[in-house]
Image (tube, rainbow, N blue to C red; front, side):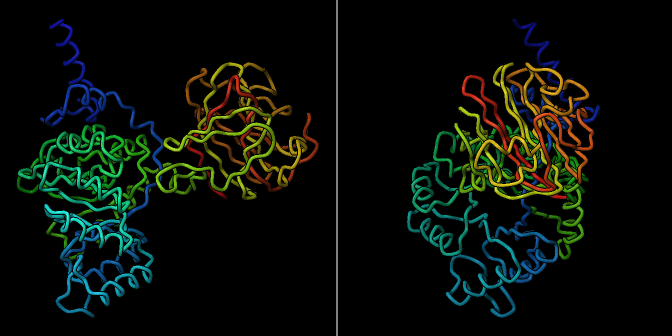
Length: 489
């Protein structure tokens, strides 16, 4: 047994070395052998990174007023901000600070400035919430007044029962931040131990830069806190530790595994902001160049940057908002994961906006070899009968059939060039591009159709624009869909 554990430990170390680009990994503190092995085995490079909304921790602009910060975010095209207590408010209010003690006039000024610059005040922190219910309520009342959804803090007490009570009462998320040691929350295990099992509005404000200071691989910390990350203060640093010369750098130019962290957040289906907090004092007077470089890096690695996620999370859960169903059966939507499961049929779940030229990407899974489904393109009018099947192309999902009825085919017209689907139970990825009459379909990265669309088989005619729809066929071998993204061309 000892021999086997030694072999396993060696394999983990070797895998970790590979994950550091073939270089020997820095001597980081492993949170656990299991987490290190999981990170080493993760294929982050294969993850299609989703687009996260960008924000700034106002501390990045600490040498400016809060009002000036909003103007700079508007210039950057960044639509979110997390305020910190104590920032100078504005030239119009000499000596005033942004915090929960602002006057009614100052609050009105802030709200007007936010609206004028198109910036959402989503968070507040890191704020001292005190130890008493009265001091905590003062912060929560302020959050309610300002429309703040996340309060980042480092609670002084170990008893989180009161925080949990207030988070529920005010419907405000409480994100535990991790300043470096001697902060009591510098270890991600400590944060996790306090929020695990509690209301989902209690979680972590994950600051990867501070973990790097403590020689902790932030990927392990993110994975440990999976499902509990409510806020992200994203940093990149020139190296781990706190040696002279080690400092914050633009995202993607340091050793902070930024792309891997974005991949991990995608896998976790994180639905918050990517919040830049740039603490390099040398450039604090003008952090704009670093911010611009960071935004360009995120754009370069985000697969779905120009896409709209059309099955979206709203209010913390997924809904079929914007979708309609025609015919027998229905699609169940898992509110936590956004996975659609077809039931009964034959029916069509169709998206309520007509499309002309577009790229549609989604993942699907068959529950059995006999699973029968499909994706309809350019349904010309609102379905009120089964007649739509004669006037729109269906990209088929059916591994049991062959030729023009096999997965990837333009149903009844054009067969797939290759058979590229995965076995039942595994997720597949479709990329469907319809430009003019040119239809290109890739399945799991392999081109299966490149074709000038035309009527044929059961399809009598085609429309230049229309609705897209997902077919539910039966309940014995249902299809599943998730991660549905649309880009209009």
